[in-house]
Amino acid sequence: GNRPSAVMDNYHGYIRYSSVFFPAENGTIELNWKPPDDFAKNNLPRNLLYQFNGLFVWISSNQLNFALFNREERRWEIISRSALNFDINQWYQISVSYGDNGMFLFLNGTKITEGKFKGAINDKNDIYLARGPLWSISDKPISSGYFETIKIYDYQKISKLVSGEIKWE
Image 1 (cartoon, helix red, strand yellow):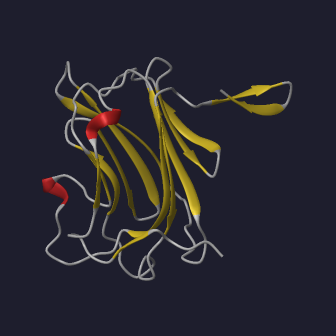
Image 2 (cartoon, helix red, strand yellow; image 1 turned 90 degrees about the vertical axis):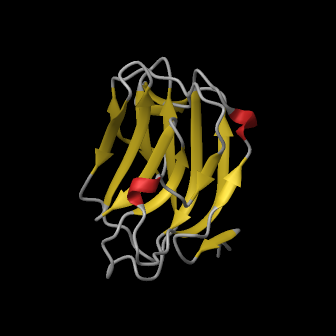
């Protein structure tokens, strides 16, 4: 089976990616993630991706969330999808897309929700895997799970239904 390239065993474990990818008017970030072993027992939020004043992706109580920072209004624009049942024995591909076409959230290649906010990531901050903003810190150590691959694109990789078939752009 798939072997993780990183295991985050507590809140203080994370991986930082250089800010060479940002700022970006349009983009897509994909990651392969497997829930931690205690996922069903512990309903604390699991931070997957975070960039200060940029983007934030997290899971809480089987709800997948994607937030993009709105610089003009100085607030986070959030889209989410609830009632997702994550199996601790399965890998998932989570993708977020932002830019001229709006905000999109994909799970295993299927669009699960979208938002109308057409924002860019304007700051040149590093992006963190398995670390969230300061207001999300828990005093209990929690695992964000297992991470295998992260891909960052400088365009919106979105799917469209063409003649009954999904085509990726």
